[in-house]
Image (cartoon, rainbow, N blue to C red; front, top):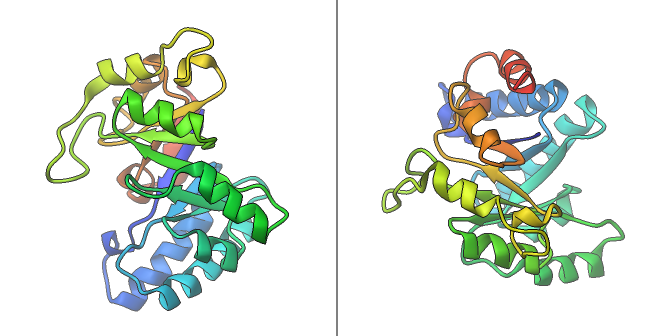
Length: 218
């Protein structure tokens, strides 16, 4: 099971400086607790401030884990500049294949590329273009004001393709569940075929170590 923390520093109380400090502390905690992927998703920051934060986030991850990966939301250039492990591509971005080609021209490392998906077609396109995994949303609640929850049935459909399909059912491609996922409904997502669980509040609120412990028992 993969665990995927999506950051939102505005979710912390306090001043801008205090929120930033709290976010870096949470990133370090997530890496140490066993979260597999951390997506730095601070979309309101200008390029300079985002790159500075990304450098600090990379250090926080490296100092606390040898396996956790840091991804930058939508900015392969900043991911490369900061030494992050890869990028998460929101809907409407360049396909993963183009990002991978650009990345390998600038780095010897292979990037981790996550892709946002909202349907079976999105997931299949992500796999065809060589994404590392897809994050399917919203399962239980809206993540955008104009989007309705797609539900467990869609998650199950996406994750139940026959061998050789271009969907996650091929056994080669991971689909993570996002959108209202919590400790109560996480097991239902896994039973529907999800390879992992993604969230902001799931990992940013409360006792993170206890959350990870409970999830790993599922």
